[in-house]
Image (tube, rainbow, N blue to C red; front, top):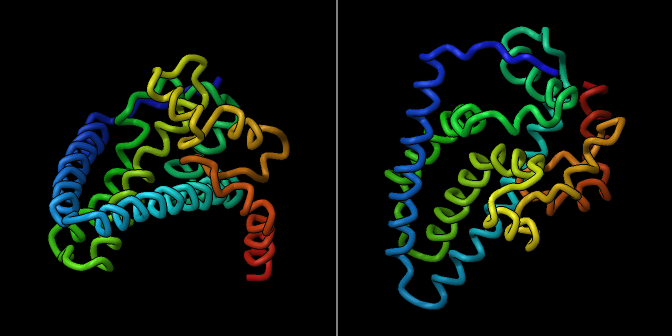
Length: 218
């Protein structure tokens, strides 16, 4: 079993505050988007942007997961202990994350996503279909990125909450069966952990092997 070090109170407070601020700004941007919906065309545009944003979040989760599993080691300066180690530890004890709290799982991601969300909320006008679509894609991508570790935790839980099980059955979020493919040695594929919906395509085109060969040449 992996024993995680005690997390400093200042870190917990920063991550908790970031998650609260992210939630507030996401609500504000969602409100602005809903106000911009004046008819069926706008509603379809926003629905399409939600789908695109969720798939982009899945892709980003896969790229980050691949990097954490593949590059460097726990001793790599700066990113080793904070970024790489949690991914490697997860393979040693996959169920450990089930006991982690929400802030611990998503607080740091909310901190990273917050500047983009704030900028779009304050600086991007939502008039017109292109800007409405842009705002929707940004919102749903960032929401997907921030909740990814919660979705990942639910895929490891024996009895997740009923609404989560419903979303898993619909295939909207990562399912235990989809994620189990990644936890089979040599752990070199099926990296996407938001929904896993684009994993088959990425495996078919050999994205992960191509990235490794590219890095090898560099």
